[in-house]
Amino acid sequence: MTFTVGDRHDPALLAEAARLVAEVPNTRLAGRVGELVVDNARWRGVECVNLIAAEAPTSPVVRALLATEAGTRASGGHIGALSRCFPGMRYLDQLEALCVALLADLFDAEFADQRLMGGMAGCLVAFTVLARPGEHVMSLPLCAGGDSSGHLDGPAGVRGLTISAIPFDPVELTVDLDEFGRRARARRPAVVSLNQTTALFALPVREMKRIIEPWGGRLYFDGAHQAGLIAGGQYPNPLAEGADILTGSGGKTFSGPQSGMIMWNDELLSEPIVSAIFPVLTGSHQLNRVAALALAACELREFGTGYMAAVVRNARALAAALHDRGFTVIGAHRGYTDTHQVLVDVRAHGGGVVVSQTLERANIMVNKMLLPAAADVARPVSGGIRLGTTEVTRLGMGPAEMTVLAEFIARVVLAGDDPDAVAGRVREFRAAFQTLGFCFPAIGQLALTVPRQERE
Ligand SMILES: *Cc1c(COP(=O)(O)O)cnc(C)c1O
Image (tube, rainbow, N blue to C red; front, side):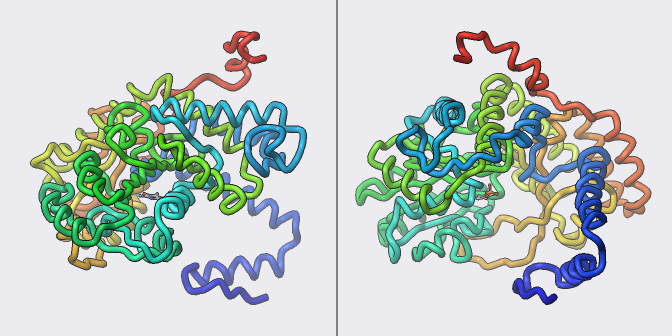
């Protein structure tokens, strides 16, 4: 058997898997599937300190919902008996409507949709609805924390849009509004897309929208990372500042299932958005995911303010502790960060790839990241690492523990301690933090807490 899946996957890993499939009986292959999941859960879920800013741990209730029967039902179509492809949706229609209402409420939006598989699908919807092929979009370049979502290799490119860079001030870490105004007035983009994967500070949504309004330019805020922060009141709500569409990821700060979400206020956008989702990006979407997303939204309504405030407080504490130990932390003059993220310049220590791989050996997960640079400068080498505090915060760590984490990182990266030796100490430290906070209790108990008349 030969695989031809392009050159992106690791050919050695694919070859080894193909060998197993050819040689090993099915029961052992099934066992291997389970074993890999269990091994990962022990390592990443119990032993490691996960500082990947794109991740968050889901509550036990959210995880339980992901394994429910709802995930076996064909959901094709829109909410309501007359809009579905298949019957039998009496309860699941109500569940989906509840998810929509929860998302709209959390983001103070008129409208929301729950069906997207991921934030990236939301980007494709936004670019489909807000611009026609051949039209122009201005988006944040990679060196401004931008994401593929706004570039030629992502949804904007697939939609056939032409793209130019939003000018970004690499020192102030925000959009250069004067230069943006000049370039936007010259190009008259149909869409301005704010899509940061490295997001340390709020962006000037209101000011940018005001600049593009004269020609009906639309502002799209890709809040994949910020969704939980926005819901928890720790990041300005882009919709309130004039964004036309806000999308988010369920699995980043939102701390729910990996999922997408899209919110908007203009009723004229409703038909195009809903039709771009079904039957284009979804056929039958995952109702177990929708249930989990609704539950995560409930958790954020209940605990979001305290949870997200603690996340930001920990990010600032971690940044300061890294700075104190001699690291070059980006944004020091602005207090390092207003989000869950910390960005560190590690060019002097081998760069982002080397440092993140060394820290992985020490059971500390961070990811390589480009450093801020002037918007038009191509800089393909990751000189930095990005750290996020969502998971460690939900596990109960506070500023004191951020100091311990900074010390582990300094021992490995600055002092050159053997990462394999540090791994054991990280495991011991992590052992004391195994229970998630900001969660509802188990699902059985939860049902009892809902008064009967409210369930019917
Ligand atoms: C992570 C990310 C996405 C993709 O979201 P998924 O939920 O992983 O599909 C899109 N845009 C930005 C800016 C991101 O950081």
